Structures are given as structure tokens and as C-alpha cells.
Image (cartoon, rainbow, N blue to C red; front, side, top):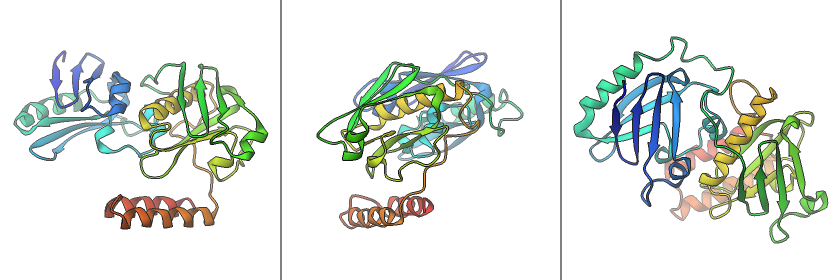
Length: 285
């Protein structure tokens, strides 16, 4: 196609075999998109294309990635807010006809088996080395191993006893990332030969915990995606998605639901967010 379709915070450039998404840099652009800069999405990595009405006189063009095609979306596991979705392009409503034209053009070049999982990642992960500061330690990844260095101000006694840790990619089966947007988030490395790990991330030496201000989405999610892509390259990760989360202690789930209820009563969480997060927590029992 060779054309460019510009919207709010991003522009899509349509090439012969892929769409190059360039994210606008600026204070109004979500920080995750700022951090990503640009992404090349091969057409074979796209399952479907939709065009729907948006908010306040806009339309939304979205390319849905195929299962297992993008390590970033695998690591996010459906936790990204709409504004941070790198596959959404928001346009003024007056460009709806033009957007529909490009949507039809895209549909014409998508693979026939677009809904089938891919056997390998088709979208490049953020490149190592990467690092970010969590609440209880610093995480770093050099492309071959992940290192956690604990902070005395935040690390639990279990982590202090275990000492600073280094995990070769070859020993891992996957990555579990939890968004810090509502609850405390965490990044947990899943061992290939040790399926049973502590239920609580703050007691697990293979995990770092974070919240707003520590390990925000735009730092911790690209990190998780890079590690997940390296694990897949080693042949250790499941082929379709990130690994399943470990089961949590029912008492811990109850405490988190009570905390969620307090946030809801204080007006810090909407009715929809309360219902959604409560269902996610109950599903972990």
C-alpha cells in the first residue's frame, strides 16, 4: 500500500508485508507508547481488523494480533488499558471513510489462518539490555539472564535470606506480569523445573513487586516481553501465550478483595473496574 494514516498519538505506515506503527512523542501520549517508539507488525501477525465508533467524535481502527504473535501482548495478558493498546489507532470521525478503506485493504492481505496461534513470535520484542527499579529490588536483563538485586528498604526477609538472584533464560518456562494500575504489580519468573513457587510475590525470590512509581507499566512490561521472547527462543515457553499464574492463598485473595472494596467506596475504582478486578481475583482461587 505504501500510504500513511495518521491519528491521535500514532501513525500507521502500510508497507508491502507489514504495518509500521510510529508513536507520537509527547506528554499527551501514554508513557508505554512513548517508550515503545515504533513497532513493525507483519501482516501475518494480525488476526483481524475492526473499525468502531470511539469517544467524543472519533473512530477506532484496531488490528487484533494473532495468539502468540507478539511477546508484549502475551506478557500483558489482557491487562492494558485501551489508551495504552499499541494496536489501536484513534482518528477524527471525519476520517471514517478513509479508515474504512485502509481496514478493507488490510483485511485483504491477512493470512487465511489468522485465528490460529503462531509457533514463534512474529513481532520483535524490546531489545535488551533492559532494567527497571521495583519496590523491593532492581531488575536487569542482558539478553541471557535476569538479575534481581534486593533493596533493604523494601525486600522481605525471605528475599534477603535468599540473597541477590540471577536466572539464566534457559532455566525459565515463562514470565508472569501483573499490572500495577490498581493493585501492587509484580514480575515473576517461572522456573522450568520448579513449578511450585510461593503464592505471594513478595515472598518469592524469583519475583519483584511494584506499584505506581515503582516498576510502572512502561518500564516493567517491555522488560517482561523481552524476557518472554528470549524464553520462547530457547524453546522453553508455551507456544501460544504467557504461562498460567500460580494459585494464591484464599486469605490473600480475600484481603485483596477487601482492599478493592475500600478503593471502590473511596471513588478510586469505578463500578466496572471493581467488578472486573474482583472476577480476576476470584478466578485465581
